[in-house]
Image (cartoon, rainbow, N blue to C red; front, side, top):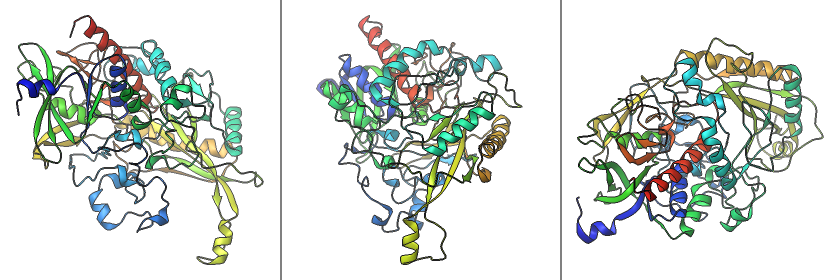
Length: 569
């Protein structure tokens, strides 16, 4: 529907942000605080902070199937259930039914989605690490993918900036492989984790462990409390929404900051499927959307547009945005749009038990574990694969002591006694960028008449070799630290997407002929369109990417507003 006159004026803003997840929230916050009138378009329903977290206080016994995946849910959440946790009755409230949002798989891809205000910022793992200097030069050094157009130094001040606002707890360690940041008080390792850290550093050169760096408040600042945020309560029910605003999400942090400016308009239920490009003006003028409930089509207009719909959906929008200047999709002269899909591969590691510390316990249910930074292909370590992996893990006490009782008072009594200490560590490995890992649009249509995506991606030989090392090194480290009955695992069923860290579908680069975005996250040939979610990533590192999305978004928003002031857009 093309709208004109007064209706067009009502639908015209300074900026449009598509998507309300981690990066979309940051774009809205930065642009509104710099004085722009911003429209945020979210394809899903509204989820209001606190009142919208319907399951936040529930336990497994509060659900009809005690939290399990019943037959109907298994059919409706056929991809989500592959995670092993997200389709559980107590968790799936914020995940999407795959049956309502179909996609196809040439090779299996585990696409896990959250279509609502806040997107996956309400269900993310909150692990927040900076990339190191080599993460930005690895492509250039080993010839995989294209060179990043920026370096760590370009992003470092923006890491500082977003860490201070988001609130990252962690321990400063002065390790090159894992740069320090602006941290709040770290959460405490328990006694067995402390033992593991000491043994690791004594028995392995260059290997370390630290408490996870997470977006949970432990020492809220005045700015954070003014937004209604408080300290973490150690409930570890984060996936259901945090009523205390302790962990960083759009709802708890960037959305209230943006609303405070009175410059933000949030509209839900609008599926943006195309960027409107004016060939005569040589720039984008707005977006086209369809209402998910009424199926009404509508256009919105702005001087600048931020696409933050997630790596897959931002590329999906750009693929449908064709014009004389962009006949193969927005910014796609290079034919790289939709290619180079990356994710972190996981489900390879080990676990074991250890005697001792029977008189020790810990307080609460800490929503965090330990982190072992990359040590492979770092310093003097050389392997038969490129790049590396880190581990996330934790030690905890099992509940209960052995008993033959399967129900009744004896079983109940046994469960009141703390059991043996256990510990597990699981690897998170870097995926190399590859043009053959891609997504395409099919002729199949969804319920809104929009093209269905087909994925064609898999782990390469480099990732397969790395996964063996992830398991074997985990076994070696636990056994060296004195753990017993150590069992390694390497799940062959897990597919790309399972890390829920999709990246690379509209990569940044130095040239239009090899990339989709320039060094400022602008689309080549449509410089008033910015993409700052996972689509922009040129490589994947082995650490969680969300903090980097935040820093890239804040940096790009600052650039965009300055260019707007110079009348360059």
